[in-house]
Amino acid sequence: MADTTTVTPFTLDVPQSDLDDLGRRLRSTRWPERETVEDTSQGPRLAKVQALVEHWATAYDWRRAEALLNGWGQSTTTIDGLTIHFLHIRSAVPSARPLLLTHGWPGSVLEFRHAIGPLTDPEAHGGSAEDAFHLVVPSLPGFGFSGKPTTTGWTLARTARAWSAVMDRLGYTDWFAQGGDLGATVTAELAALQATEDIGLAGIHLNMALFQPTDDEARNASPAEQAMLREGGHYWQELSAYSQQMSTRPQTIGYALSDSPVGLASWIYAMFQDVGGSHDEHGDVEALFTLDEVLDDVMLYWLPNTAASAARAYWEANRTGWANPGTVEHPLTIPVGLSVMPGEYVRRSRRWAERRYSDLVFFNEVARGGHFALLEQPELLVADIRATFRGLR
Image (cartoon, rainbow, N blue to C red; front, side):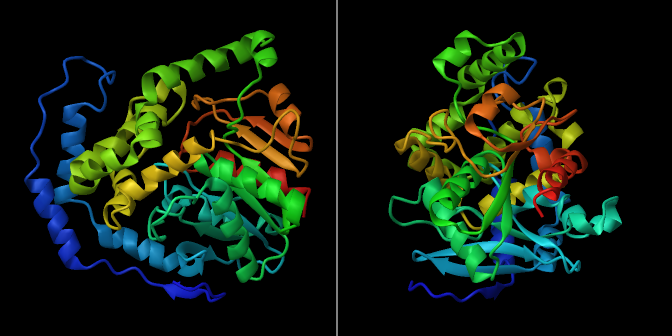
């Protein structure tokens, strides 16, 4: 597909035959036996997944989610031969500044659903007009309704360069960026690109910092930093099987996730279960999210059949050593805001962050919330985003 600078409106209208096929697959599920423990240490519990699937088959309404996406306004453009899908929601406030939001895995553009109103129309949500943003929310390559790479090389750094092209095509020359999970790395890559090419990026906000503490920092960690290291170690040893699988054999898991909607749903549900919420809330998906919120997210993998292509993002990142801009030797110089969620297993201290982000304009240890920060605690995170960028306008 030849590249152009064209931005094309996109309307989502999933064929009813695709929804009928999904219903047939759900009704013919072959279930495993119940887990042999009374907790989630073997993965999502059978009764929980069966309840999720029962709701999916009998009460869930995809057309509601479809109308929500269409109502925000969707577009596509072609970059490096790949279709990039994105939401573009303009604020009615004349002085609004553009803000690029990047999701992670197993997230989607719907990760930001509760923040869109407060960010674009702050006066209606307890803010002031000076806090208004125009939002650009792309689907990562191989995710949602973006195209699926057919060759290797779509790294997170390349994705950042594509995001810069999207902003340029929309006519934005002075803008901000925000991200968590894979989106945090893309956002940091944008900051590194700004340092060398002046792409118009004026500042970033992260709700996850993916740099690794140095050996010296680990040896001299404070008690709070030692707790961060322990919890990160627990996550890697007990909860990261999905990451190791997708980082090394994405095609293998792709066959199962592409064929079985229940397999895909449980694969994603496990993440909502294990890393959603503050530490005292881990494991209780239904207390943190509605079943529709979980299933809307699953559907953005099921309908476009992107389980395998999304998994390959981990394989690409693993090939480059999970490089993340912002090091002690080469810190990011752009203004950075960092929100640390208490339930996030990958947490970093202000002291560590200041060594990687030489202009750390905002740092906050958020009161509640976990990995899906803007979905779980939109009010708290929107306040942090406003505080980060207010002085940079």
